[in-house]
Each structure stands twice: as structure tokens, then as C-alpha cells.
Image 1: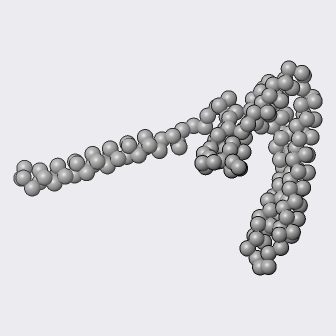
Image 2 (image 1 turned 120 degrees about the vertical axis):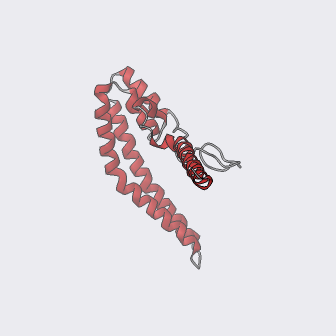
Image 3 (image 1 turned 135 degrees about the horizontal axis):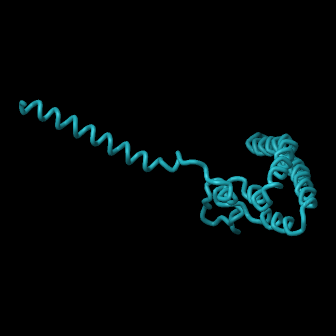
Length: 171
């Protein structure tokens, strides 16, 4: 075998090994994205926060009833919540218009808040109505689960310096 052919084989082998090593390192670095979703017990402090924890606090035979009730409720209030976000967004867009009308912006923000408040009140009524059907011990666990703060998986989970847990700057 000639020296030139040996160098070509050596170069191809080196390139292949580098490609293979890069693939393995990349797969290891990104591997967490391709794993199976965690079991439901681990989801209590993941997206869904207190609602997922509330479902997990119930015995299996009541979980499906809770999920169905909550799914129905979110479908009912979704248009109101969407409207509240739209009104709020439009109010903030008015800040860039001339002449600025602070009273109109405030009125729109109050309207947005009122719409959201009605929707949240309906959701709370549904939760209380469902809880009223539970035996005392299950109701206590259900309430405890609902009272827990949302997990850090919500959004990025990071806070900016000078920011409290609620997302508002410290004063």
C-alpha cells in the first residue's frame, strides 16, 4: 500500500471518528429533550401547577371527574380570558398614540381586570362546587394541593434582580 493511500485512509478514519464523537456528544447534550414524559406524580410541580397537584391529591376514581370538570370550565372561560388579554394589550398600545389619554388607558385596564375577575370567579365557583362533593379528608388534601404556589417550571423560573416571587419589582 502506498504512503499516499495510507494517509487518505488515515484522514477518512479520523474524520469518521470525529463525526461519531460529535454525534455522541451532541446526543448526550440534547438527550434530555428526547426522554419520555415524566409520570403524573412528578407533574405536580410542573406546568399545570396547583391544578395538576389537585388532580393527584384525589383518589384515581375521582381524578377523571376533576379533569373533566376543569377542562369544561377552562373551555367556558377561555373566551373571557382572551378578551381580557386583548383589551389589556390594546390599552397598552394606546400609550404610544398622540395625544396620550391616560384616563382612557386606565379605563381599558380596569375593564380588562373586570372581565378577568368575572372569569376567575366562575372558575373558583366551579372548584368550590367540585370540592363540596368530596369527603372531608379528600377535600382537605384537595384544598392543600390547590393552595400550593406554582412550580418554578412555569416560564423560565428565573427572576430578575430586585424582583419578588410575584414578578413585581421590589420597592
